[in-house]
Image (cartoon, rainbow, N blue to C red; front, side, top):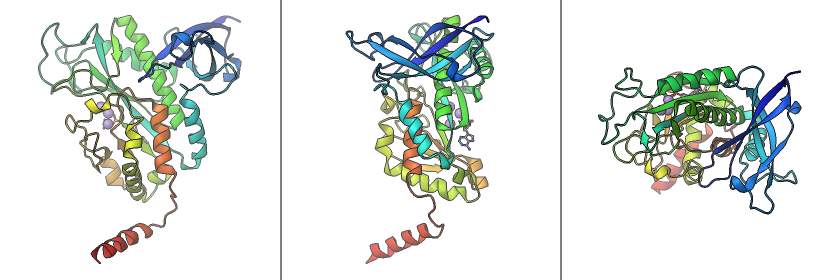
Length: 359
Ligand code: ADP
Ligand code: MN
Ligand code: MN
Ligand code: MN
């Protein structure tokens, strides 16, 4: 049996935005099942996950995929971080998402996440001249040509690696700012979408090394008239995808409205610089939902309106958000309320309210 390289990947404790770490363990290969991959440990004092005198943290493998970089039977192993006694480490946000996804599993929630990011060459956005600024935004989004597109080689290599790893990547596109791109994962369940997003981010940063480019997830990498970077989170439940789903989607929007600030609290650090009401965003202090409205907090896509069922797009999450926290928060807000409301109940309530108001 030939040895294989297993790249153990975990999320660190850096605040306010956690980052990715990884290291390699040689295992007797090949590996077919998760339980063939041993737990491991690391020095938490170097990752803001422990202090110096008691620094051991545990790595518990939770998902593995083929390693598209090393190829062969080599694997990437996504891990949850635990304390030495086996309890959940404070930086481990996946554990809660695991519970929430299980608790509300009969809703069969699907997530599709659009990860925007900016490529940087040193201190400058890739595609920006050494001094001054490039031509204003306009031609770069979904553009073609060496004067508009910066980093396609990296982006193509990343897309291919995601497919080789078996991630449910659903597409890529160049974005509004030079050197800005997006990849999408899903639609799949909360845990899979979040795990795959983190793995996709790791692959991006790792492949960026080969090109000497760094990947930034800052919500507003350049101040001024340059688009920020978001992580639009598309969401549906079984009821939303079925006949009459549009009603369920509208109810969900109202539930999301009532919990706006709780959502913003976990939608990424520094998001206020991005959610200004300009550059296809709704202001961070407002909540609006609307059909095909890219200036809304929640957009109902045109096909959802047409088919009267489908999904909603939460446009608020920032590019640096933690998908475990975002997906768990959305499920809690939308699924915690009863979904078996009779269709007639809601309008009657509103009518009664109006009458009461007139008195
Ligand atoms: P946009 O027009 O906002 O740029 P994209 O095509 O980039 O949209 O992304 C749409 C996302 O919606 C994809 O990640 C896709 O996987 C996801 N998606 C599609 N159908 C559903 C669904 N029923 N529930 C949740 N997400 C979905
Ligand atoms: Mn998109
Ligand atoms: Mn986009
Ligand atoms: Mn979008």
